[in-house]
View (cartoon, rainbow, N blue to C red):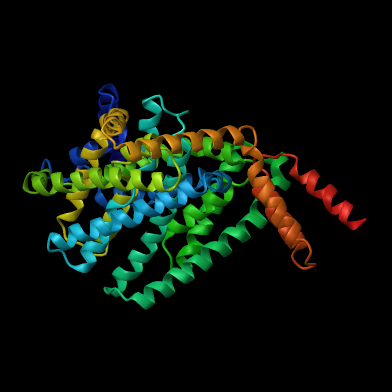
Length: 464
């Protein structure tokens, strides 16, 4: 086992360093490292595949746990219409497009469903890294893009659960699917609400005794506990890890936990991507090169079109909408997880996995260059637009600018204002008063560290 870990780490380290020097995402380096140590390139295993798979599965849990830690309900609510309409347009559009591509390629329903799920999710990691490296972190479109990625991550976890259920039954039944969605939605709400009521309060009480060592152990314990709970409830372990990340994101220690988890996440995420690369047969890439190019074109064109339309319909300016769409032109970690799920359950064609991974590598490589084309494409479109369309574009720009100016300085209070209204309405009932107070205290504590004393004062005032 130590030998396996040594081979993985030294190969991944050298290859990722080379990719870093070439200014390419290190994720691609990890996948290439997997190809190098895998059984398909040199005809033998340099590492034990079972050990790598076990570590890769742990890596998936840590990656999803950390994605959940980055989730902020307040940030999502502040993006409102843009996040919901944009994400819905992209997901529904790409699901339909992916399923159509599958049926056009003469795949059966099961393969087409899995293919559609693989194509509808952009990579949060790659998008944010590309935006950061392009110096656009403070750009106006980033807030909406981040909220859309959050919703996509949530939907991806839901899709994992649904696809697992469909694959096990090996059938697609509309009524059963709706029932499963309903049960999943209720379960998610219960877990999240109960978690928000209990865990932030617990951490707040023991906060004076939490050093870094104790905090990371407690966080991992809670994560694995939710993983086991999800498995016992018949859902995927990934769902449990993601939900616990979402819950801990609402605690005062969320940023500290993120910082402590970063090294552990990086190590196991690297192992996961190496395990992905180990499943690639270079010979198959030559065999399926036309399919790889076709899928890559579908991803790029589909994401640009649906991303731009969704953000435009969601109220963004055309320029911001196009910058968002042009930054979403790749698939990533969730696509790999879904592809690996289909392979593990033996419900997808063997050719889909290498095609998806290769298409992801290609689109990831092209992402920075496509992002740079967003502004020139917008300028060309505006230049050749009809007078009516130009007027509409200009009007939207003015509306967004006015809204932004009016909201300046009040964005931090938006969630608190809505929370206050709901609290005021629900506090009238004797049974829910304490629960509602506790829930909103925990939901608000990231931005208002003194919310405990404020809530206590409010309760004392009401008592008197």
